[in-house]
Length: 217
Image 1 (cartoon, helix red, strand yellow):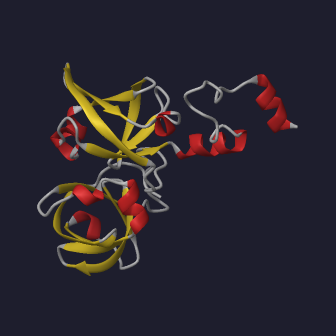
Image 2 (cartoon, rainbow, N blue to C red; image 1 turned 90 degrees about the vertical axis):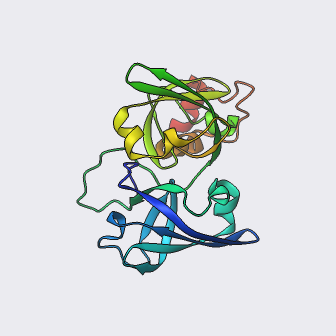
């Protein structure tokens, strides 16, 4: 489990994709401290298992499901990536519950200056947007952020200067894909309530008293 608080910006040292799987090697320093082979590190929000450690980085395998769900395939040698180690049991919970299992990708639609912050608007599929709520949590490329606005086509977040300095988000361009992980608690609730399979475009996913009574019986 992760919290979405980025520890370090790593650099892609090498990426080898064979069909729809492969390996990625990343130069890093802070996240390899006390890390062992077999441990998990989130790379742009993607939970990857460390298969090799060196003094200044690590290597991880990439499976087909990861390639299908994420933006990892567009990474190139020299690209910066957000890194976070799995949360220690005695660690400080600074962000929100992040599993490192990406729901899908969104697309950067707009950057807009807003005082000392930058408003970022991202479009996403309706099957992702249905789990995003205003003032709720979202992980964008592994960054724990608060949703400032959500519509039926996109959502917006406000990026403070510290987040801008410590992550890759504001180095993106309009049209770039980003990895999205919605709030895991919301997904579990939707599953239990039977909302997950309902069409988000018809309004049939709305919570009603009849549905609550059915679940509580």
